[in-house]
Length: 289
Image (tube, rainbow, N blue to C red; front, side, top):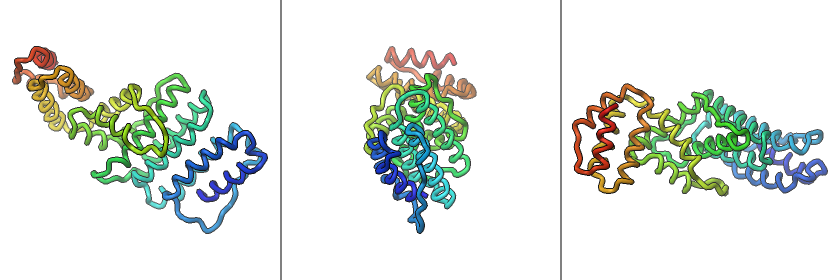
């Protein structure tokens, strides 16, 4: 299936039916070659006909064939690792970005997110607790697809529960291990390999990452949230730099998605004090929750 798709695109590119799309098809072919490690060798090749497909429908057709190949040749065989999901979703994104901007591309990006949602529900991604780049690749692709929907359809993409639930353990790890998890994740996204895509990670990515974290933190046990809140409040009281203290406070506010934590962290704030004016104002505000 995958190798059939590769050969079919190569044939399309050389035929009159690919005229006007040759440069785009060359880029798509290069992207698909990067996904070769996901797929097993095929004993027979059956070429896919693009004869009667309009130029503007060729990329969506390629996407559907690629998605079908990934599910049947990878996921259905139990190879639903985070690494495979990461590579697949990034290549999916690369191919979508070859389309002209506009409503059609926004709809294709939204469709890709819906497909990933269904895949995660049916074939949960498997990754070790030590894995960093693999799940981060999934986060990157999902975030970029959501931003593409927003840009081309003029509205924010509303994530389905299964996507949020599947990335929650990864987001929880960052929240519990780092005092500034949003900044850390954004830095990881900036530094990670993106299959030769040039993407500037900025404010729009930050908002989505914050939303992912807020959803994930709600699912943590209450005691874990209280312990993290206490650690952050103690750091705020000792921090000399007001800007850093504010960043700690912004991290703390990510846990405000569930009101059950309010009385607990309010009590913690009442038991702390600081000789720093800015830190004292934060303690006072938290104590009133």
